[in-house]
Image (cartoon, rainbow, N blue to C red; front, side, top):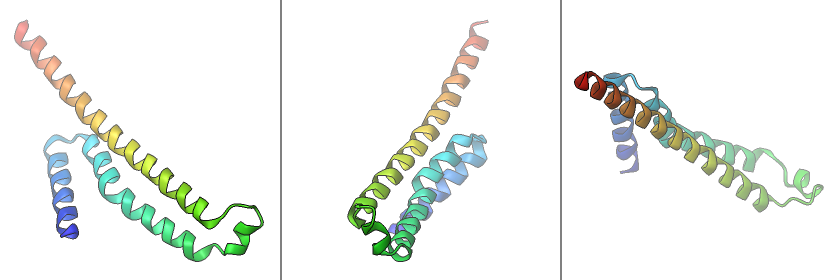
Length: 105
């Protein structure tokens, strides 16, 4: 079910981008689809590749690092989504203001 939802979101984002050529849809797609997959791979790689002894010397525990990674990837994801929505909204508002000025002239 999750794969079908991801494919549906990807199809919608690509379709809307091809119709409007608005880069906000691509950034939104990165925030919704690509970044969560990439960040999951980073967390898994960190968990498997960094030995616990390297962290114990610094006084930082593994749960601290995993929490920091989780929060940082969520902030980046939310920033990408917000930026994509901002660009989409800006292009819509810019389009409406241009058509309104043309109609009033």
